[in-house]
Length: 259
Image (cartoon, rainbow, N blue to C red; front, side, top):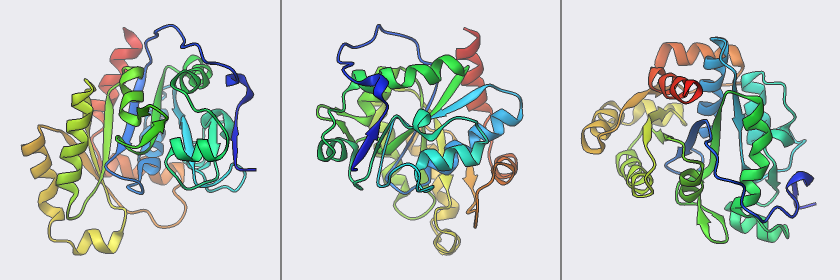
């Protein structure tokens, strides 16, 4: 088996009526920057405050559900949300490729309409969603759309997850430029310690956040620490409280929920 997706989206080629999605899209400057842990951490923190926030991973690749290592399974473990993994990640593909290529290899016609339809049940169950992308904003998502096009179609702001070390200023500003080109508001940037040793020994780390704010006109919400071992809900919530200011995220979600 090379791929799986929920049967409810079969044959859904007609785009759904334009709707107002409530949430924030978590994208990254690259693959492997820690989007999953940041998505889970923010969702867990908001849920610990009593907010009815869910998580959605529209498409994932690199492993199949049931192995315990997919982003959807990690999101559920980190947030304590009682959904089935296939509900959080309607499209899962085995091949470690960009979604457009992984879907093609699995014989699945991945479309914008299908992705949107697959997210509807989650959107109905939660007041707002934290939506985790695949790779970065310029990753090919379908045969004719990038991840950034999908964010624009959803009409939600984006939160950028970036590495802490050397090179992150360039990658972050380019990501922000692409999002803004698509008319997507940028809610902020989270610097993530994806490698504890590198982050602590890289002399650029101390200045990168300030440079991103100065040259990109972006708000850095904090530097999320490396978490060794299992990223439990309790550990994620504690790390958010100690190292991040998620008030901009909270305000955005409160505005869309109450409007």
